[in-house]
Length: 214
Image 1: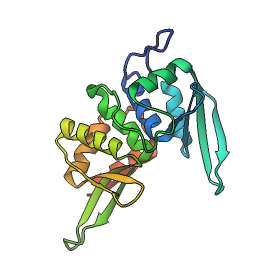
Image 2 (image 1 turned 90 degrees about the vertical axis):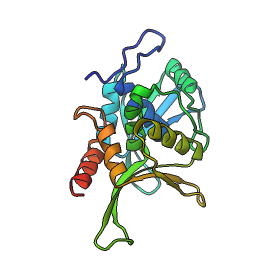
Image 3 (image 1 turned 30 degrees about the vertical axis):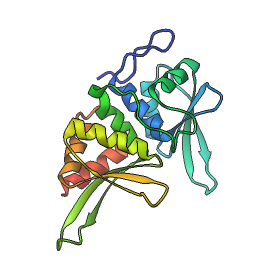
């Protein structure tokens, strides 16, 4: 499977699974700087940024940094005005955390886009359901400070998979879109439809281990 976009001279990409995944990652773990040129992607997982470099038409330097708590993180900075403007056309903006909403993603590549979102701000976990003795519930979730973005994702997944999910967090600053039980299994099979799709390997293995144990 080809991961990277085939590019013309002025950043007119042909949509591919890798490009859709990259947009999802930028929508969550990325940032459009205020200078109109640079796109930053930060992650604590070096492997994830290596995957980003496999998608990009030109390899970028992976920088190392520490946050105020001494935690390690890695960062790629892409300096490309044409790419920056293309991302603006899709609906991304600087300071997008609370403002991000609907994005222009081809429906046939939405699974790849959502996998990028999930790798950026998603989680997988199990918990005991208090309503049933010895019952464990599996959950896949995505968090965002923007209810518009959460609603956009939920609507698209409902159309694509017929799953409803649930939204929480209306009394705090972060909203969470959650899919549990059979819906989580259906969602996982959809986004990990092949073993060679670009993804955060650590998270994919966690999802598989949780669902296999369910």
